[in-house]
Length: 427
Image (cartoon, rainbow, N blue to C red; front, side, top):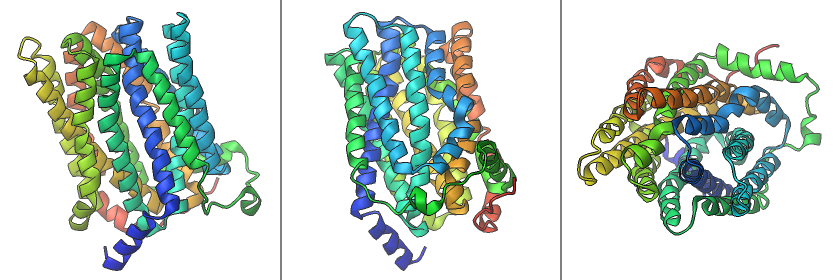
């Protein structure tokens, strides 16, 4: 990367427009992290859920990717991205605020928790597809990786501070009240998004396509299936997310039930361990200056897989002094997030560079249909296996699977170098 290109990228990510988008995304991430910690705690500690119920709850958050993941991309490509994100954030705020309200009235149930998880999952689907498709509209191609690194750094700050703060709050207030704070974070996100001016063409300028929805969906699928780089990345991310979902679905149960450490310790483990992702987001540019995208992605996946070994080992040490299992959990979380973030920033940037702008949402949704669509099955499988085989045994299954994630991207560098921006396939 030349100095002039690097300087241009740095200047673009310091503009007021990008900084406000960055702030909006940061508050959205804070909301997600609070919710990911508080929802299972509400289920486990307030509503006395077991492994299968927690599996159903996690599946409810991601089932939307399987059900409407493909058409969501086609819809978002037809819509303006910023208003889509604003509406999605409002829906999440309202849905999450209903939980403390019903809890206060003593009407909260697991069924309602599943319903809220489904609603939040759908809103998050539209927000995330629009968010990843929006980046090329506010920065140039040269600045995409720098922008993604900064956006990921805030995601990791949220992942670090969010669970730790939420865990401490759980010591003072109940989990449903933490979700009220979660709702406020989404309201702040809306406030920042409302102030941004972008370069995305208006509806009148882009003459919204009259093609059928099915044609748009098929165009996105064929783009991903037909492009060697996108196809390999989809397989790799899909395998990685499937086994990571098994591990992370059972993590609250491992910490709260198997080890009996409590919500505060869970917040600290998830928060402090996620510092690895924050470091990854800050150091990636230097690593990428020395290593190719394919090598960086492979190293990230291998590091993440190796680190997950610490989780089931920690779960086997329930009789040991508390410092040993907690230390292993933090170490595992640290390495896993470092590797995962290194891989994720790189693969998202590669995808955004080789995909036409008017296909970004469909490309993202097509990949997420496979990647996130498998997660409900992984969550339900984790809950069933956790109930029948035990939490630790089930985690070992996730760990073994994690070691296969880098195989699909072996040799991907030569394909990336040969890839011009992908052409839109005929439908």
